[in-house]
Length: 331
Image 1 (cartoon, rainbow, N blue to C red):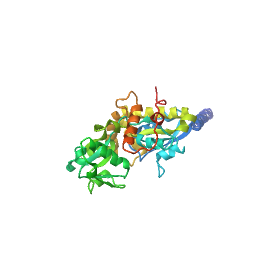
Image 2 (cartoon, rainbow, N blue to C red):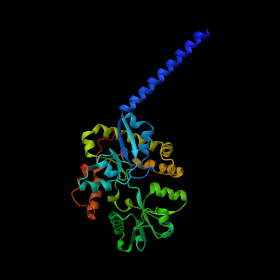
Image 3 (tube, helix red, strand yellow):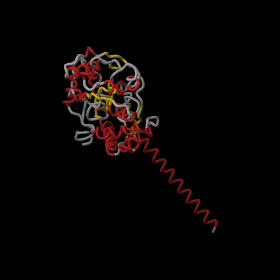
Image 4 (spheres, rainbow, N blue to C red):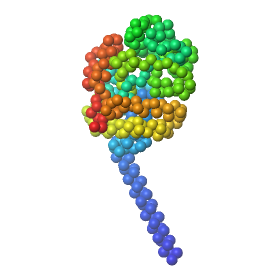
């Protein structure tokens, strides 16, 4: 009896082992069958990127046949890596793609991460900057781009204010909270991150949103991008990536708390309270009034390019119809 029992147990163990081995082999085969691609971020991980991390964690990329690596931009930057084909996909912005296109760089936006521009000029309440007119006599701290002065001037004109009365300086790597405690009065921020952080710090700020003063400044920022070669040679891969990303962002819209946990799992150094509150704030902003997440409108691309041309920021011909596409979004 003992001998028979031992034989049964041995057979059972062998069957279990062979079953586990078969399962492992199938898993390894499935992984090998996946197409390896990468998506490069525009910055360190934050809630603009949550949908990508959700798509990876929840297996949405795998369901579409992709093995996706999410990578940091490094010195080259996301646009350069995507344009050169060193990364198949990247997080970009309408403004940078517009400038790239007129220089012959074949970047294409395939989805709007956030439907409307949530950025604006922030300042501590004590600075008494409630509108563009109040920029006069104040110091703006930024990163030294010609676009900054043009945007400031553009919205100041709506109140007949003079941009030449603004002191514009570069603050380098200093963050908003450090800068305004020194010699800066206001800075350009995304409310969904820095504004939310101000709330958590209990530091009251005034916001002058770009979209309150100009429809042409309601551009897509950020977007998911690829290059023309990927679209031409690997349209199925582009569609698979966009479909999976769409599922990821849709999940983040419907489950902001769980989505925040997924981002924190991949980027544990982030402030958990900030991620949670930022995710909650952004959840309804991803799709907003669009018929589906990721949708882009031709007028938005035309309007911003016109604004850039009017402000002498765009040299060369720009074809908005080639700068973006909705064809890879889920129907």
